[in-house]
Amino acid sequence: MTKDLRFECQPGCIECCRQQGFVYLTQADLERAATFLGLKPAAFERKYVYRTRHRMRLRVPRRANCHFLHQGGCGIHPAKPSQCYAFPFWPELLGSRRAWAKTARYCPGIGQGPLIQIATATAQAEEMRQGFPEQYR
Image (cartoon, rainbow, N blue to C red; front, side, top):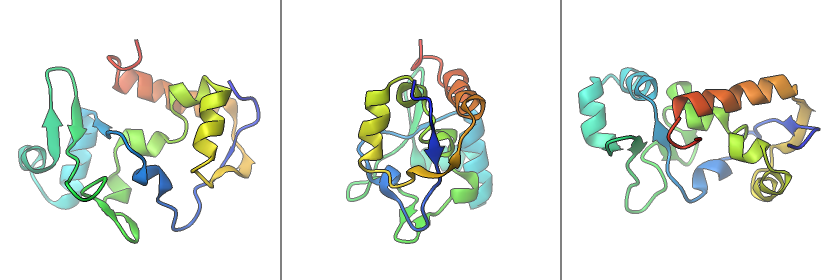
């Protein structure tokens, strides 16, 4: 694990949202986003969610990375999924200096702002582990 963590989202930056990959959801994430958009959870799920037996994730639109990513940022920012909220304090990034450094190449917020308490970062990583146990066995 890297020992000196500095991170502060930079105004207007959406680089984390532009990366390849999926945004996985917990049931609480789905319900929070649905409420924010004024939809029933089932309607939100039909329109925006792909579900397998063990996981849910946001559907990826054809010409974009996310239905909710707009020029000005995240359209559901106040209700964004826990995976988005926790970035960059994901277990796989905190557990590897190499992964942290690789992420810093596209994320201008890494290395900026005040020092982050390791306990704060690891608590967010633990939330990810709890929310997505099949991913972090």
